[in-house]
Length: 127
Image 1 (cartoon, helix red, strand yellow):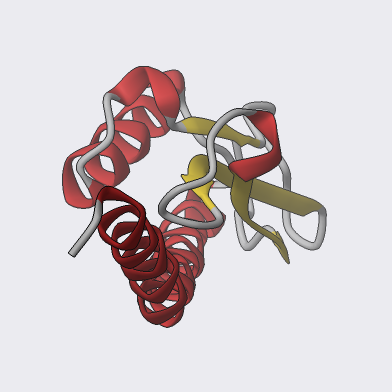
Image 2: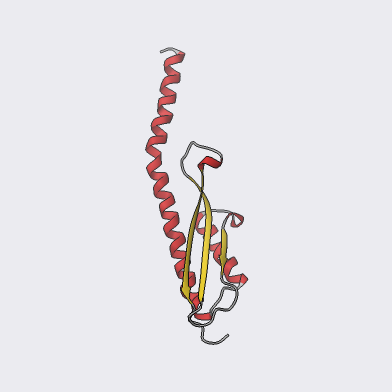
């Protein structure tokens, strides 16, 4: 088998590997998004009773998401309502993490930000 044939086999193997890996990458990103939605829902369910998120609350959410998904905390972005929202006023929470679209692509064309955001009405009666 010549060098040319070996090179062709290696290149075809990489294409097959990338093609077969893509469904797993899609599934991983889907599960990450589901986790983010769950984290947002849970955090808002707890925070809507008191009417806001403290900076400590947002930091705890950031650290929990980072630890659970294996990211450095600096790569997890968390923003939420930090001003007291009284009963019926909207409050929100957004969590964003970076991810990749495919295994072998590099650079900005392969980067995607996974985001979960939700808005609910506050249930806080008094500040």
